Amino acid sequence: MTIAPALSLEGIARRFGPTRVLNGVDLSVAAGERHALIGPNGAGKSTLFDVVGGVLRPDAGTVRLEGVDVTGRSPHALARAGLGRSFQATRVFARLTVLENLRCALWCGALAARSGVAARQPFSTWALWWRRSRELDERARCLLGELELDEAAHTRAGTLEYGAQRRLDLGIALASGARVLLLDEPTAGMNRDEAAHTIRWLRGVTAGKTLLVIEHDMDAVFALADRVSVLVQGRIVATGAPAEIAANERVREAYLGASRGEPAS
Image (cartoon, rainbow, N blue to C red):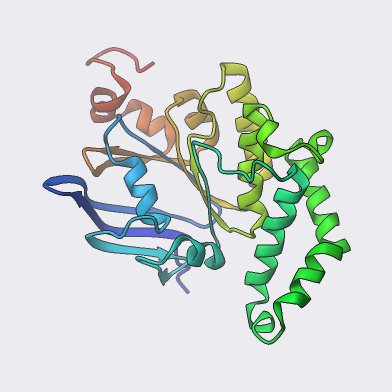
């Protein structure tokens, strides 16, 4: 029996007016794989994430999540189907505490998981469960530990320092029950030590999840990814293990900036 990829893209195309941004992107990410998407500025990486995440509809092509065609579904419908997204610009609920952010995400995930039951019960029942649920509290506090945010549980999210907000942003995606995660530059704005710590933390906290990650920091890419795909001018020009990509001459010239005969930085 053939197991469907966790995420597969076939012939994804997207233009803005006369400008073609995506030109037939094909990509397959296996269940449990950490897959990095790299490429020069303007290659179409963010547009591709917006298509996969339901922000934009493709002009052509198909997006499949765990074998199901989800092309053009809204972001909230994709979230219910198991796709989570962490943004480069964090999108936490700034006026809620860290704990309340996680409880909200867990509650929404529970609603999605029990949608058949929820449809037969009044919203007030679920609102009461959200306020009083010991299960939610226990799961939220467990996640606080995994996110290294125990001491910030009752801090308003908008006042957290940058790295903590990034962890909370990912925590919200994890709390929703997402099995496939789109991570947009998880180490952006961090120094080398902070980035290295974030990558080590990511490997642990996302164990068993499927990741598709946009990242410019090559050290982070090679430390995190099982496979790497290179997007140039709206097309995937190479896919392989990190060592293969680092040694690929076309990639070195198009993205890594090395001339022939020189080692890639």
